[in-house]
Length: 221
Image 1 (cartoon, rainbow, N blue to C red):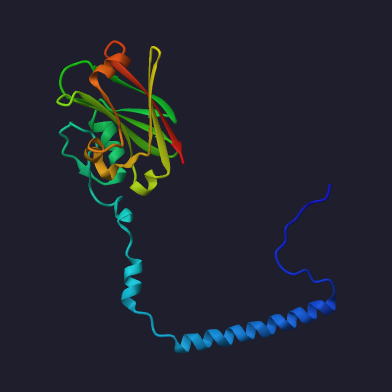
Image 2 (image 1 turned 60 degrees about the vertical axis):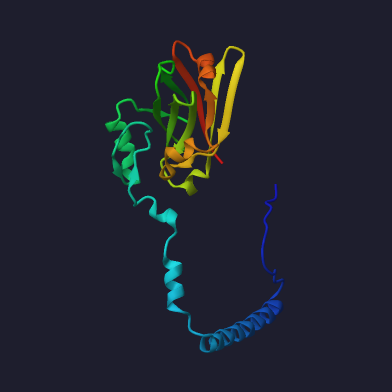
């Protein structure tokens, strides 16, 4: 079986053609070099201030260095620290925060039927990143909000999508969205449309013995 190849350039069939092509290429190279020398002498000097502006990194580049607040809602946690220390803080300072492995996990929230506002948080590790799964109960509005945060920048979060699924008897509730970077915080999520929202009546419909199981699947875009 012959091997197929794709070539880029000119195929030289004999030595005469090769000599002609080499001569033309040498002349073209000399002309190009003379043109570059002329441009270097006559073009205006570049403003050093423009170089400084280009060297300044974007806001995203600072997100891993600046201090971030704890993403646990309603935890009354005053911790602040860099992004690199957030995972350790969640898993050591908050005993109720579990850590799950895999692209598809079951996020189990117990006691959703109890009165009062509450929140449930779990860390999901997959695809080389860590995600924070949050379920928040707002007693005043009689509703639940579920969403996913990436322990990373907003730009990194754009490379992933998540799917939340509630299963019940002859019922199914699904939600798909893009996670937010943890620097944006849960407060901005709960006031936006980037979360799964359902009322307490629906929560009781899907709950079993006061526990709500949410299937969470993380995918890379």
